[in-house]
Each structure stands twice: as structure tokens, then as C-alpha cells.
Amino acid sequence: MLTNLYFVRHAHSVYTSDELGRPLSERGMRDAEVVTELLKHERIDIVYSSPYQRAIQTVEGIAKHVGSRIEIEDDFKERKLAATAVDDFLAAVQKVWEDEAFCWEGGESNRLAQQRGVRAVFRILEKHKEKTS
Image 1 (tube, rainbow, N blue to C red):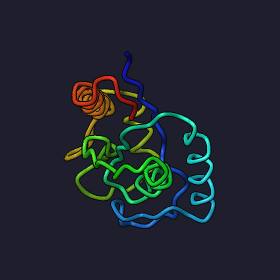
Image 2 (cartoon, one colour; image 1 turned 135 degrees about the vertical axis):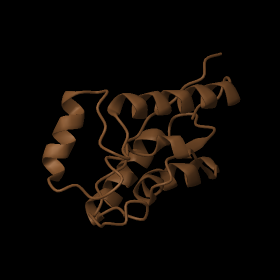
Image 3 (cartoon, rainbow, N blue to C red; image 1 turned 30 degrees about the vertical axis):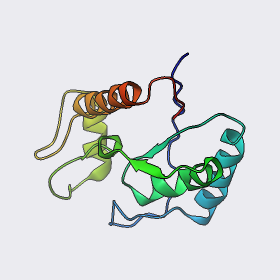
Image 4 (tube, helix red, strand yellow; image 1 turned 45 degrees about the vertical axis):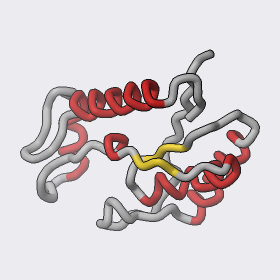
């Protein structure tokens, strides 16, 4: 039997400087309900999320539906752009998308973030053979 994974990007969130605690917007909450409706007919055994509040809120409904607590996978967090605030956010983001190996001081390149996420996926696949997450 295969192990199946469903990946869900967090729904729309309200911007705050609190990256970890940023909640879903009203639109995001409605979209999270749609995610639950789409997935509730699938046989899901385990629900994982990044540590971000908006990601947790996005999958709370499906976790409740299947009777699973949400497992937090820190390595599913977003790429850290830089150690401190950047002067021109859009230009800084554009630079890291132009060169997947580039990172600002104290930040993480897209390549490193991708590798971190892939390692997390492989850990989950190994831990939950023949399950659906």
C-alpha cells in the first residue's frame, strides 16, 4: 500500500509583523472550511502543519473531522528572508527568486528551504508508512 500526502498551502491571512502568530483573515477562514470539505472524503490518518498559526487554522477542520491532533513540523516553516528587516522587501524577495542559491545575511536561500522541506517530507514518509497525511 502507498503512503499518500496532501499538501495544503495556508489560506489568506491578515498581515501582522508577528510571523508565527499571524491569523487567517475572514476570507481565509472561509477557505479553510472549503479545504475541510474537499478533504473530508479522503482517508486521512495524520494531519501535519508548520508552526504558523495561519497554517494550523487552515487544517484544524480536517484534523477535527478525522479525529487527529495536528502534528507540528517545524521544517515546514517558510524561508527566513534575512536576519533583520530589509529596506526594500519586494527587491529582496525578487533577488532570492532570481538565484535559488542566494540568501541575505542571516536568511535562507530558496534551495536550502526546499531541501529542508524535502527532508521533512521524507521523515514523515518513513514514520507513517502506508498512511495518509
